[in-house]
Every structure is written in C-alpha cells, then in structure tokens.
Amino acid sequence: MTEMDKLECFLDRAGQLLERLERLLPNPAAGGPDWGAAQAFRWQNGRLRVLQHLHQITLVDLCGIDAQKLRVEQNTRQFVQGRPANNVLLTGSRGTGKSSLVKALLNEYASQGLRVIEVGKDGLGDIPDIVELVANRPERFILYCDDLSFNADEAGYPALKAALDGSLTTLSDNLLIYATSNRRHLMPEFMADNLATRHESEEIHPAESVEEKISLSERFGLWVSFYPFSQEEYLVIVAHWLNYFGLTKEIDEATRQAALQWSIQRGSRSGRVAWQFARDRAGSVLISG
Image (cartoon, rainbow, N blue to C red; front, side, top):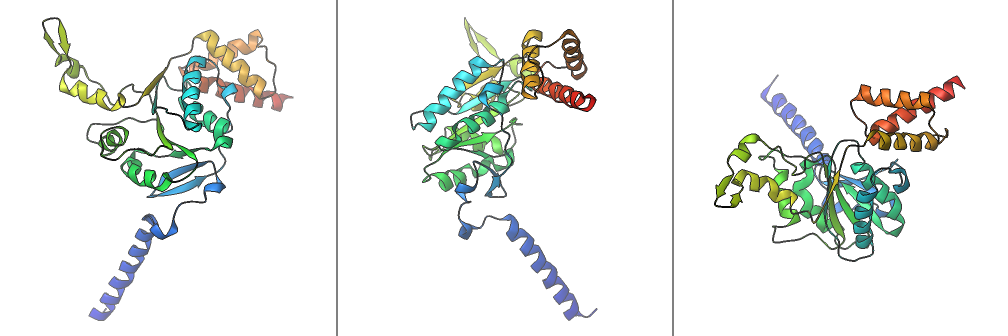
C-alpha cells in the first residue's frame, strides 16, 4: 500500500468516525421535539426522545400508599395549576409504588398539560440545557430521575445539587424535579461517618461527611417515605390486581396461600410482587379455562 493509499484510507475512516459522532451530538438546528406527539420524553445523548407505549397505571391502582399518594398528588396539582410547588424525593422500600406514582400522575394530569422528561444520572449535567429547552413552553414538566443513588465522586451529584439550589441560575417555573431512590439521602452511609460525629456539651455535631450526604436530599422541598407492606396490605393489593385482570375480588383460601407463598419465594411483600403474582394467576386461569 502506497503512502497515498494509506492517507485515503485514514481520511475515509476519519470521515466515518465523524459521522458517528455527529449522530450522538445534539443538533441545535433541529430544535425541540414534536411536543404534540407524546406526553413523555427521555433525555438521551443531548436531546429529547419521544416515548411511546407508556404504562397506563392510574392513581386508583395504587393501593396501600394513600398518605403518600395524597401528598404527592396535591403537590403535582399545585404545579399543574401554576401555583408554587416543591421538588419531590420519593424514598423507601423497593416495589412499594414510588415509580408507579409518577407514572400514574402523568396519566392523571397529562390532559391538563403535565409532561414528564426522564433523565438518567449521566444526563444530570445537562439540566441547564433541558431548562432552556422547555422554559418558554406552556406545558408543565416533571424532570423524572428514577432509582437515583450516587457515590460521592460521580459527576451527576454536584450537577443535581446545583440545579436544585446552589447555582446562579434556577429551574424554570414550568419544571420540577421528582426523584425516586431506595436511599433516603441518595448516597451510601457508613459506620465510619457516624463515628466521626462530635459531642460538645449537650450538642451533637455531625461529621462533615454526614453533612455532605444530607446536603443533596435536603434540597428537595418534599420528602415522601414508602414502607414495606404488612401481610394484609399485600393481600389487599393482590385482590386489586386479580380484579384488574378480570378475576374475582374475593380471595379464597387457596389463592391466599398461593399469594403468600409467592411472596416468600420472592422475599418481599411489595406491590410489584403482588402485581406479578396476579399476572401469573390470571394467565394460568385463562390457560386452564
């Protein structure tokens, strides 16, 4: 291969690489998405992608979390109506309805202009770009961060802190942040953090590492905690989903024992486990019928 051939091969490969990079980078000329095409979007590779085939769960379907549902729905209603409202942090046990509540709120208030933008940890640094993109829109946007947790050195951690409260700029009036997490303070907590706590006279002074862990979660104006379900609460949720799939509202003893056995095998009495049991039960009944 001659030097000229090598140069042409190199330029060809470089051109292919540039084309691939251009597809990943945001395109300012393209503007925003088709806002009328969907109710939910995902921020990915510097642009909004329309989400189709959304989960159709409703607020009525969420059993056993009435107090949490009431607080978050009230906050969301205030926001949709243009009144002051808070950023929300939903924390607690897995499968208890944190993410489902956000989905149900979208289904409830989409007709009133509510929209949801899903963003992962790797996209939190782009929050100022998202704010600029939606700032002049008439819709009301929830920036949704699901199953959020950080290590202290992750880039998204300071970006989210700054967006919530700390940056010279602020979120637009038509955007709030709703985040779900299994961790109350969004970061791992270690025994060593508590050992560094100082006692002076009658006062307790948390260590700087503890203060740092709390500093992000406290920037959310509304904290809502979710707890494991009792056995009876779990069975109520099972009954709801069995009815949803067209089976009887009443659970007979055989179904009750099967539902409890299912939860033991899964190691959890969560709403998610109840829904999975009901799907399995409904499917098996349809097959046998």
